[in-house]
Image (cartoon, rainbow, N blue to C red; front, top):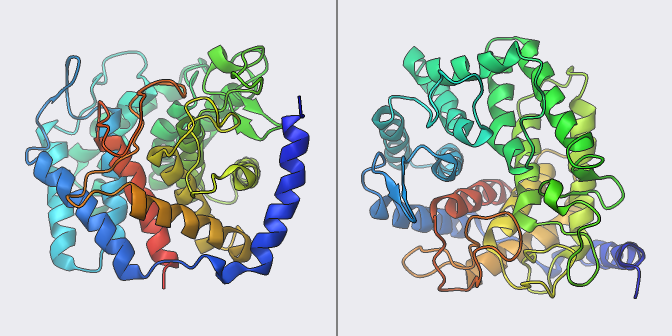
Length: 386
C-alpha cells in the first residue's frame, strides 16, 4: 500500500507549483454573480420559513433556535454585512431580530443548567451581533449568563466533538471583546486545548496530518476502508470556521493567538492537495472511495476559511485563489437549483456515511446549516471577486 502521507506531500509540491505558475487558469467570478447566488439561495430559505420562530419537525419537533438554525443566521449576518442594498439589509436584519424575539433571546437549554451544550450556544453568535447593532440588553442577557456560568467552573472537557469549536468559540471571543474581559479568552483556550490534546487518546488534532478527528470514536486505531485515518470534511470545516471567527475578533495580544493562527494555516495547507478535480472536497478527506462525491457543506467552510485568509493577507493570493475559484465555480454550477435550493448537502451526523446518499436532488434532514455555510463562503468570495 502506498503511504498516503508520503504521496500527499509529493503531489502537494507539484500542485502548488502548477497553481503558482498559472494563477489566471481559474478566475474568480464577478461580484454581482456571487451576490446573485447568495440572494437566490437565501430567498429560497426565507420563503420556505416565513415564520422564523416556527418549530422544526423532522424525526421529532425541535425549537428553531437549535444549532442548525444558528449556523444559518451566522451566514445571514455575513450576507447582511456585504449586501450593498440598504433595503435588503433591513430585510435580513428584521428576519434575524424576529427570530431572536420569537425565542425571547434564549437558548434551547435555558440558563438554569449548570452547563450548556455548545450546540445550544450557537444562537448566541447572532444574538451578540444583533446587540452590537442595537444595544438592547435582552439580546445578550441569557447567552452571557450561560457562558459566565462556565467561567467559574474547573471543568474543561465540554468540547468532546470538534463541531463544538465552531458553535461556541466565537461566542466566548465576542463576549471577551465586548466586556474587555480576558477570562472569556482564557476559558476558551482551556476548552480548546483539552479538545486538541486530551480528548480520545492524545487529543482530536493530528499534528502529522494537520487535520482533526471528529471525536474519540474516530482516532486511531479507527481506519477508513482504504486504511487511512477518518477525517470528516464538515467536521474539519467547523474547526476552520471556529478559527476564522475567533481570529477575526481576538486581540493579537492574546497569549494563544499565534497558536490558533498556526493551527489555521496548517489546516489550510493540508486541504490544498486533497481538493477534488471537480472543485469539491470529499466527505472523507483521506478516503475518496468511502462515500466519495460532491459535498457542499465542507467545501463551503473550506472556501470560507481560505478566502478569509487571502482577504486578510494571511494566505498567498497566488496559491489559494485558483483553489477558491474552482470550488466556488463548482458550487455555483453543480449545487444551486434554479429556485435557490442547495444540492449535495450532507445531512446531520458525524461521519462520511451519515445522511447518504448525497446528490443534486437529495434533501438533507435540515436545510438551514448548509445554507449558512454557503453564505459564509460567499461573503468572503464576494470580497475577493472582480
